[in-house]
Image 1 (cartoon, helix red, strand yellow):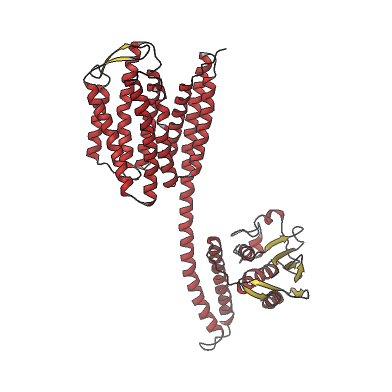
Image 2 (cartoon, rainbow, N blue to C red):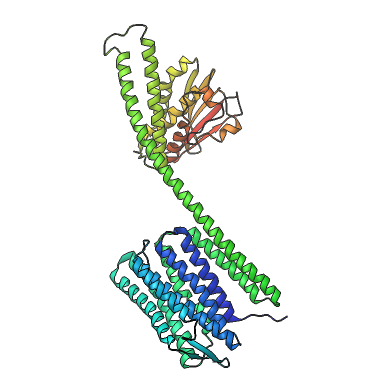
Length: 522
């Protein structure tokens, strides 16, 4: 079997696949950007120009060759126009060209592109071999002035931007100018001078390939400096590689039917790739929108939390003054209500504080003042503060500690309030009866604070929610109605900020549990 492998066809295929993939990869991440729209327009017209340019150099029928040459000029008119638009627009997002000027240039380009399809520009093809010989009309001058006018103006605009800008914008335009210079150097040499003056049209079919430096240079400038999502660019590259592999299959096909089948495969790969790129872009947009919504919600929660905490703190102060008789003696039947109100208000302050603390930890705005302190003394203090609550529930609360030094380098207040006390209070809240044993030991070069209780235990399902933000076990709030679900989350964050770890273990419901916080020795 004889392959239809042709090197010029290979390069044109790569140029078409690359231009199409890049055009849509740049366009979809920001469809409202005038620069990305102009880039898509330029790459799309580049594809049609490349195909018609290649075909015009390969036909053997004079009549067909004439119409293909006219098609090349037709797309060349729009190609030059789209290049001017991209050069004029780059790198701004908002449209820079006035509507009146745009419509005027659009109308002129449309008129020229129709004129080149008539004998006014190309009257006939007089010979095909060894080179294509044509008979041109007077309209070729008007076409040339239009094309070179657009290209020259575009280059002039880019050059002015290059010399008038500094920093990032300067580097952006540098990539575009480099790619543009390379592209038009090759096009002038191999697509104009060689065939027109040396009667050598060998390189004409490679016209699409010569466009790639400008396309890739502009794409790099947009992707790198416009900060479009790099995952879209990588997926675009993957689509291009798949299209290239499929194109190789076309070139190596031995029959016409196999060629047609592989061409259909290539079209499917490009269409599917472009569709997936569009879907990915939409997913990233939703992701960014969700991040923005979450950011606003966190800000609102923080604001409301601070306001509520302020009101509750003031209310707690008033109830405390009433309870202690600072505003005069209370009637005996009022004191239980005031005591209850004071307790509930203080709990409200604690709950709001936990939510705000969790939010700050999540955002990374908590600052720790780390100095060496005695962890044993802090652990004993946490147990002493909890004894009254334990006794009210009839629980036995004990504390034991190994001999030796328990110096920890960290923020004593944060560790005491949000780790040690939290674990002890948590055990009291979830132990209806029995005992709670608190211990502090040395183990494998670490300081281990452990709280073991005879409480309700933990199910395997509930273990997944421990230490998570706002996490609750299935029935946890039935046992501890005041649980916010933030205590253990905060304990974990503070412990890890001190180089430690937290863990929980239980053999199941009704078997009690043990929580540990382990810190590195100073």
